[in-house]
Each structure stands twice: as structure tokens, then as C-alpha cells.
Amino acid sequence: MSLDVAALRAREYPWMDAHAGVYLNAASTGPMPQRAVDAAAEWSALRAQPHRIALSHMFETVATSRRQFAALVGADASEIALMPNTTYGLNLAARALPLRPGVILTFDGEFPSCVYPFQALGARGITLEFIPRRDGLPDEDALVTAIAQRADVVAVVVSWVQFATGFVADLARIGAACRARGVFFIVDGIQGCGVRPIDLHALPVDLFASGAQKWQLSPWGTGFVYVRRDLVTALEPHDVGWACMKSSTDYTRLTDYAFDFFDDARRFEVVTLAYHDFAVANASTALLLEAGVPAIAAHLETLGDRVVAWAQSRDDVRLVTPASRERRAGVFAFAPRDADGMAARLRAAGVAHVVREGAIRLSPHCYNTTEEMDRVLAVLDG
Image 1 (cartoon, rainbow, N blue to C red):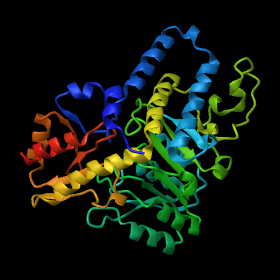
Image 2: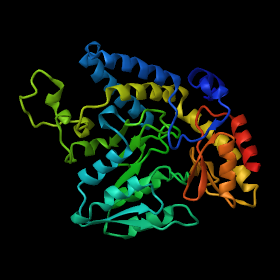
Image 3: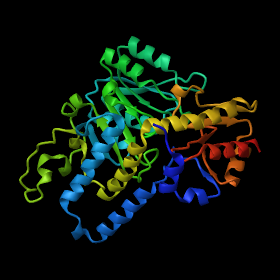
Image 4: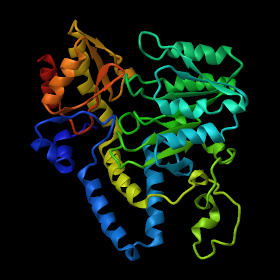
């Protein structure tokens, strides 16, 4: 199945053809498609007259979110808890997993959400250690070796796709090393979820957290955490509220206090959910599922090939993102000798991009065309 970029763009992003610039910053904020904008307007009208919103409509909205997020990552809805962002899911991992005193390993260069929640565990005798980079990229070999050889390792936390380099971790390989040693495996999935296929049931991953505001093209404040089925009831929720109890579904008997968590991942949903925002996220997620994540991934491979070839053709540019398709997703980073000059040219041409860790980062999505990418590379050539 191939991606019909022109039809998708005309239907969901009509403003892009009238826009003089090019939007290449999905790794920071994904633009909502028209269907999501329409859903936001519909729900804003409902929220203005809340007597029109039935409880059943609210409950079905978030149930749809769990089903769609599960479909996106190859999981069951019962393994999905709705979260406001990736960090909440990673904090769940840090606080709820039964970690004995020891060491948690991560890559040097990880996004801070993979660092601070785990550095906060010092009082429990748990320390976070960084595996040094090799040639500027995560050293997966060193990580797997450390897992196999060290008895003090209790968990590993890595990004599926690195925010600054676009490096894609081999989750099957790392997870297998963790499973062989009884080590928990925690994954930050935000930079790959929606643009790279994944089947969590086929992977030895314990928790996988993702915010939906980037590649999932959804509002801020929406996201999810996947908890492996046999871990759901084994984890002791760190945060407890009324919404994670079975009794919370009957609003007529809320004071019949029954301390009885849901048997599925809803036990980790502590607060009243943002029904409005998740309704909008549902529209965006439906688009990704309809287009097909494999088709989106193939389109991004084609766009990425152009960036890789361009960077490798220049003696004043160092390609940061791996050249191999197997090791990259939608993030394409390169470090020019004159980074300020190239970034200035992009800004002048209206090309939305960012500079991360000394490199220019371009992050296209399903709505970007090959013609746009060629035009951007011409701008970079000056």
C-alpha cells in the first residue's frame, strides 16, 4: 500500500499549498489534520453546552482512544492507560515497577524524560548510569554487553527513536538481553509512534510511553502508556485517585467506597481525562491508521534518502542520522560547518526546523512531498 500524499494533503492540510514555507518540524509539534480541527470545533461547541454531552459519549471517546492507540502499537486496549504525555508514562515505570536496589542503564544523549524520573530514585538505592556514545550515536553493543555481564542492572530505559539523531534502537535485541537477565525494559516511544511500524506483542518490552502531540498529530496533553499484560495487575500504582477504581463508573454511588482497582491498565489513570482532547486525538489517530503506518514509513524513507544523499555529497556537512534505513525513522539531522548560516537560510525561506545538540533537525511527515524536500535542499545549498 502506497501513500497518496497529494490526496491526503488536499483533504487534511489544504493550507500547506498556499503556505510559502515548508513545515519540517513534526518531531517537535505535529500539525493537526483538518478532521482533528473539525473534531476540536465540535467538542468545543459541546463543552460550551455540557448538558448535551452524555456520560456514555465521554466514556466511549476514551475507550476509542485506548483501542486506537493499541492498534497503532500492536497491543490490546486493556494494556493501554491514557496519559497527558510521555513523561507521565515514564514516571509510572520509575515509581510502580518493583525495582530492587541497583543500576538502571540508559544511553548518553537521551531526552531528559528518560533521565530525571530515574535519577530521582536514589533514596531507594537505585542509580542511573549512562552508556557512552560511539561516533556520536548510542552504543547498542556496549549496552547489550553491560546487560549480559552485570548483575547489578535492574532496568534499562531507552528511546525507540532518538530525538536529536534519529537513531532507531533495536528493541528486539535490547529487550531479549533484558529478558534473559530478568531486567525490566522501558521504552520512550514518542519519536517513532505513528511513523514507524511496531508490534509490542512481538517485542520483550515491559512499558512503552508516548505522547501524541508530535508524530501522532494530536493535541498537547494526550498520550498513553502500554503496560505488558502480565505486569498490569502486578504493579502497585504509585498515584491513586478516584478514576482508577472500578466504582468510578457508577456516578450515583461514588461514596460507596470500594478500594478496588480496575483489572486493566485503567488502574493507572488517576484523574478525570481530557475527553475533548482525546476526541481530537482520535481523529488524528484514525488518519494514521487509515493511511497505514507502513506506508507512512516508506514515504519517510524516500524523503530521508534525499537528505542522506545530500549530506553525504557535501564535505562541509556531517550526517548525524544513520544512513541506513533500518536505523532511522522521521528525524533527519546533520551538522554543517556553518550551522548558523544554513539555519538562517532555512528561516528566511520559511522552512520550519530546529537545531538540536549542534545539528539541524528536519522532521517531515505524511503531508510533505518530495518536491518540497528537494526545494529545501536547494535552499541549504544556498
